[in-house]
Image (cartoon, rainbow, N blue to C red):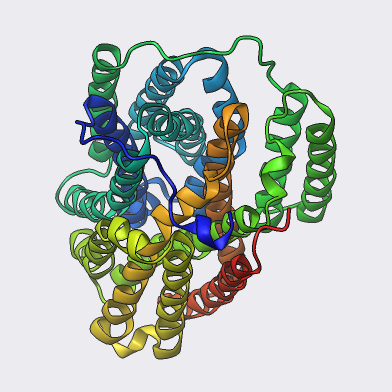
Length: 455
């Protein structure tokens, strides 16, 4: 992806209607965002009702992220083999049933295990939806579709936080997961009636060795950061498993994660910056709502409304992406977004939570919203740019894998860094310091894009 190729090079496509496929994709993405928002806003109430420790609370998110991220590459390959429609339907069915069971949970073990099952369903949804965009749209229509996909991150997070806050404040937190079930069933109906059977490639074999070693490797990595015992053992298992995984991928005919994807310096840099962006951002979205409720005494609804400076600005910035990438370049917009996002984390860390909401939270959130709005769409485009055929399907899985595993590892890492602290203000202040560290690493990888392809 040379500098001149950073501008999204696409063939001109006549003005066409997107049809129902884009709507299904965006609602599916919103479903995943809504699910996360429900957890972010209801964590305090879930913890109190089920009597969960701080570690167990973190695993409500980590269990979901582990199965989500660990299975994404496999799910992307499954979509290539059996078709996007079947994969999407299977994901929606699993996600919907698991949502019902999360809502019915009466213990830590049940809610954590059902969140893990939700992650399995989400792992099937995410690559199937992105692949549907790549399969059904071309040229500027695809560029606009990805921009809408990125904009959904802003409006979806904003609306999801408000919905989650309303439910947590005035109803039982369980109602939110019943809402997940309703949206999931609606999407199943839309998919059955609105999407024709997609192409499938039965001659492509599933890389079972790669699937097993990747799941063990990524799961052990997160546990080594946030587990309660045998953490060193888990870290060694992660290193061994991921090393075997890399070896398998270099030898098999149809690898789960083709290593050719990582030979392009720019694509690799984008994947790594995405990893560290989610490592910082997931921790922020998980910990800040708790801090707002415990430090300022906000209700879950007010805490969700307090995120509007971030989510609304992110939505507006996302809508500007097609115009900005046409005027400048995909890479330039991406790097600018990373720098602004990092400045937002630095500002929040320097000021401190005790300076009050408007100065410490709202002001940095504006920078975070602009930065993340400028990152998501261009990072998605750059992550799949220059791939074709079988590799293109795997690339969509890799993009989502780095996205989800980054969030899981980041949350596990920062949860470890704040373990032992009791005061809510001390927890969020120390957490924001480590978010800055992760954001600086993200910036380093963003700047490495300027070095060019050199495969």
